[in-house]
Picture (cartoon, rainbow, N blue to C red):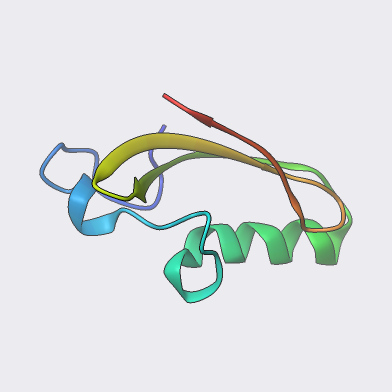
Length: 75
């Protein structure tokens, strides 16, 4: 479940990250990417509140051994 913010509907807009923008816009995915790359492992990153335009999603990201985002699933 959500691991980078409190689990409440009021918290999601505050903690939501722009996963597609990456870098500073998504510190959680930047960290997951770096860990996957440095340890040469695949990471299924659990759920992160994601902001895309004016929409919010509960998103799970998968990073490959190269640190590249391979897939994401919005719930």
